[in-house]
Length: 271
Image 1 (spheres, rainbow, N blue to C red):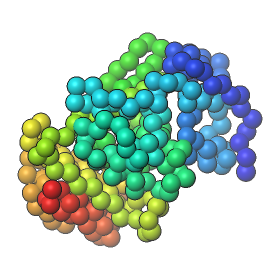
Image 2 (cartoon, helix red, strand yellow; image 1 turned 90 degrees about the vertical axis):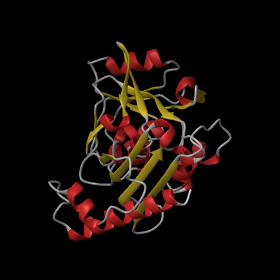
Image 3 (cartoon, rainbow, N blue to C red; image 1 turned 30 degrees about the vertical axis):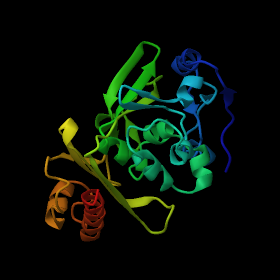
Image 4 (cartoon, helix red, strand yellow; image 1 turned 180 degrees about the vertical axis):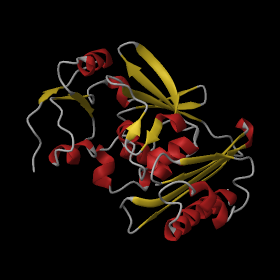
């Protein structure tokens, strides 16, 4: 199957892109790497009348550090983060996560902002950025607003983006020298979608400690607990976190999500 006919624009400024997206005369979608939108177009799951290519906007491809915070433009690719060569107050965490995303061909094209905006529960950046305490800078014709990553993803393929808005930047706080980070996922084979994701960050300098249970049937489950990185909380604890979700009565799902979180905690404990 092929997409329905659509118009295509590639603006050079963010303001021009936002103006196109805000025009209610046509159904418009932003596009960058097209690793998620492309297949959906081919399957006709989405049928926009206009695609707005945002890859020609310089600020959306920039990586910079701002007072100990790593700022990523929405169009920064997974491969760019994997390859390094940028100021990195996260001490290599993003490169580690990026290297485990799909395959190199996908990482060459796929973008951080696109992955986050797509909000696939199995996506690496959805769980990792929430665990890191990142903020999402959302842009629209009326200005910008900052949304904590944990509040940005509100459901399966659902975000807090309003019509005409797009992700402009992701702001990730730097990790202190004593911070401990762990990330693990369970896939049927390397490069495929995650069936269970666990992420843990404990950073005493920020008084920040968080565990994320990802690849669930909704937004990631977030637990802020000062002792979360110290020891495995046990399978019963994970079952309690999944209670009330479609996975809550599935012993296999409880088990693999526990294993993913346990591995993340183990990785954090050896740092």
